[in-house]
Amino acid sequence: MSLIDFSVVQEQRDEVLATLSKLQSDKRKLLEELDRHKDCDPEVMEQMKEDVPVAREATNRWTGAKCAVLDVTIQCFIVV
Image (cartoon, rainbow, N blue to C red; front, side):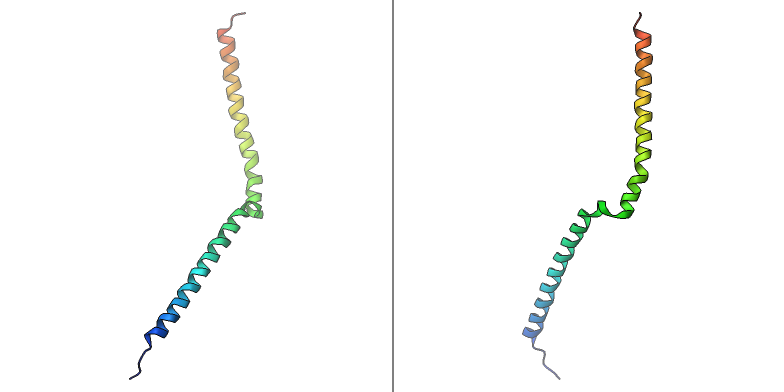
């Protein structure tokens, strides 16, 4: 029957936990950096290029409808 030196096991465990903590911290930092550069991703940029015309059309519809309502309102309430 062999004896286990628990102090050695505890030291190894502490080393592994310290390494794990450092690696998790490094991973978190790298993910934050990657998130900062997300807008430069070619796929994201391509999606933004596709979304711009749709947003522009929606804006034009909204402002066009608003102007049409304003014109009708002015014509109805202003007697020349």
